[in-house]
Length: 85
Image (tube, rainbow, N blue to C red; front, side):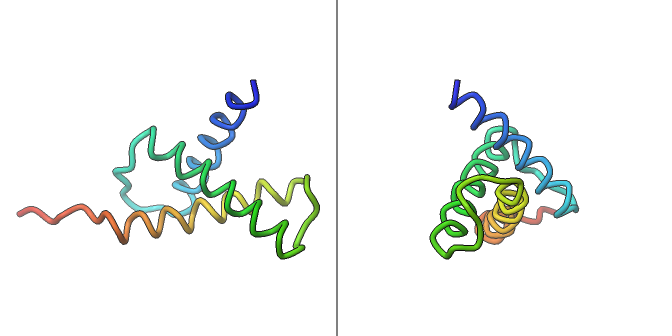
């Protein structure tokens, strides 16, 4: 059941990050979930190690969105769609 929640929250975080980032986006459903999950994991891990927040809380959700936005930006820099004319 834990992994189902990870996937659902990862998808929600990924969709919110795509919405906030704006612009035309060709990232698919699976990549959105993966970016949301990885962004969430990284933001939580970094925040807890640095001591910015405790082990649980709403701040994790906000940090997850910020982490996913950063990963989306990195993804678009690395995998830019080629311009076709």
